[in-house]
Image 1 (cartoon, rainbow, N blue to C red):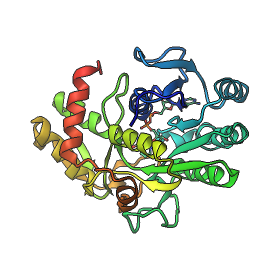
Image 2: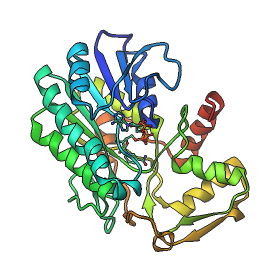
Image 3: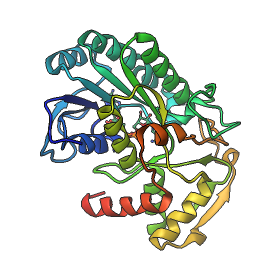
Image 4: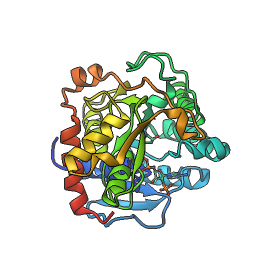
Length: 305
Ligand SMILES: NC(=O)c1ccc[n+]([C@@H]2O[C@H](COP(=O)([O-])OP(=O)(O)OC[C@H]3O[C@@H](n4cnc5c(N)ncnc54)[C@H](OP(=O)(O)O)[C@@H]3O)[C@@H](O)[C@H]2O)c1
């Protein structure tokens, strides 16, 4: 990519895991406006402007977008607690679907391109891994709200890119809720954990997805794309790999079935995403588990989690 251009990229949910990585991926090359619900950024930002923005606050959203007139908005804001989404359906819908509908309406008039981050949870998990043309059939409310967002973006007529991913992980400031960090923290504290061996995914390093978004924007790619890691394995196998890489006691990990966890939300079992299209069209190299965990290790040294 070339030296910093005057192109303005606005990132929503910039304090979240992916949001932070997207800001970092774009900052050397574009003028970045990082926005988040919090009054202040969760970390010091040297090459991006920070602006408080709750995407469900329509007047604030409108004012923010109209004042910056960004060429691209990358929507990393989402209600991501899959179980709690079953309990707080209204809030989940407002953030994941209704706010997206309102944002694309405002942005279409400004002529902004919209990048929406989506998920394999739009599928039922009976026949994964899924390619971009597979038929969505969500089995939980989070997936339903994320599919509604995709449909709003497509129906709005806005120039757009939808990037679907699965089991996003990584290390970033004030972020402690993804699968890899949960396994690491549990094993570090010698806490035994039960991990399902019937949910299959190709887990995704957030840094890699952020790089992919930046490349896709530079190449002006549109449409729907999957982005994921290379290893299609179940969560138990993934947890064992994490234990092995970081030298934790793997005996603390016990396999179990999804039903045994009695979670509020059901989960796709045979899921994962086929990534041939992104590799072919964007010429990018995907991360395998070891390279992903190496990056997590590096990032952990740089932030206080
Ligand atoms: N995590 C996964 O395994 C996974 C898998 C597939 C797809 N995805 C998708 O990837 C994207 C990024 O997820 P992530 O893992 O980076 O999640 P994350 O770390 O939970 O980040 C989401 C961010 O959105 C913010 N947010 C929530 N409601 C908001 C609102 N009303 N206005 C502004 N910001 C709001 C959150 O702020 P608070 O911290 O204040 O709540 C948080 O900073 C999401 O679209 C998600 O659906 C995630």
